[in-house]
View (cartoon, rainbow, N blue to C red):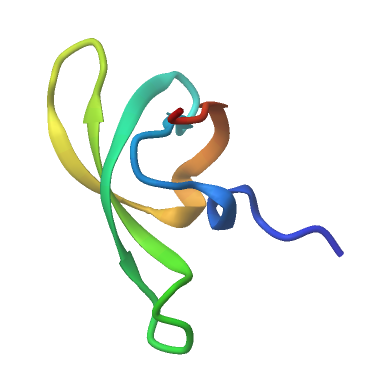
Length: 67
């Protein structure tokens, strides 16, 4: 069984949120069972600059990794 994509997200990565929103990951909150496994992400929309929290399941794909 493949692990969900959001478990591989790290700070500074650009990700696809939902169907068409590209965002940069600013921070994340770990889960209750595993504090190192991200469940909520604070992201900044790269087009509008809007900052918000999204649930891990909303992250569909990692577009580029932070170097």
